Image 1 (tube, protein in one colour):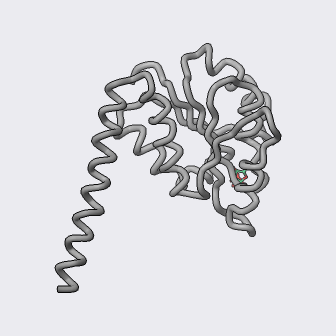
Image 2 (cartoon, rainbow, N blue to C red):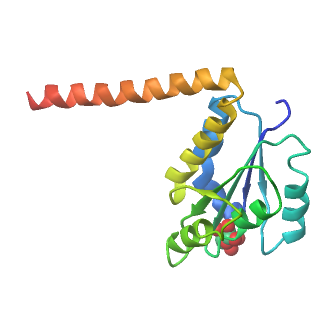
Length: 167
Ligand code: RP5
């Protein structure tokens, strides 16, 4: 794979099962990416090193996923000018509500584009990263158009099937 342009980072390997759709979509679109575990709380120096050099290392978007007191996306956004997409991971006693609030409620000046909780958000994080890349990459833009058309065709086929069932 060539130079990675998207970094997916997660606070714990226990988050990884919730992020499969994110990784898969980037693979399907042929977007070179890196997947790493690093924690805002447990390995803060690693997060800072990776994030402060991310732009110089060729990354264009960072996706940060974390659960519970999910400070990862905010800390990443504080250390890079790159667009940061935060995925609140479900789990723990509050099932992702804690991570949602910690990720979305950023103070003014440090933006994090926060997705839905869990695997639905993981899917949309990849697609949002792809939309950002598509602004300058016509190959990715064409794939995105095809993806959107396929999705619409699937919905219309489901509607036709339902109409046939209902008579
Ligand atoms: C967060 O703590 C991680 O992102 C994970 O969602 C949660 C629990 O981590 P583990 O105790 O499973 O490593 O920082």
